[in-house]
Length: 142
Image 1 (cartoon, rainbow, N blue to C red):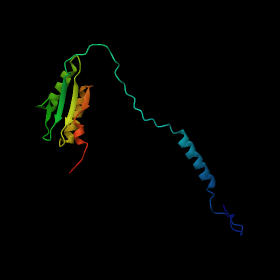
Image 2: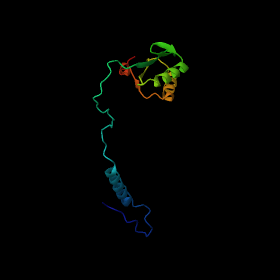
Image 3: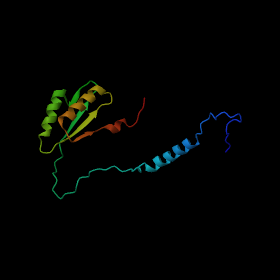
Image 4: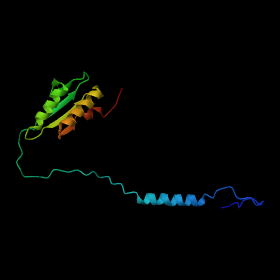
């Protein structure tokens, strides 16, 4: 590697020597890469513990909330408003076993109504909640 020592006329060299800076940056980069934690591809899930208790043959109650493109909220097929939805959710919390709440907005349902209903559900304290019908939207077409 050739380096110039400046001119012969005695004037100082005006170029900065960047080789030590590059060396320090490379060392820091290598140290950073070495200290990155190893990426794990596992997801911790709390699985239920098996029990020998007898199970009920009765299907558990499932409540379904459907949002329509006409800005209607359907609770198990009946049209209700947001206040009735909150009352129904509070009523389901009084059951000995909390039923699962299934949320299924239709394709053209408004996003604003969806966010409002999700806020009502979140505020109600429901713990068994699931999105259903998402498999209908896995392909996009015109």
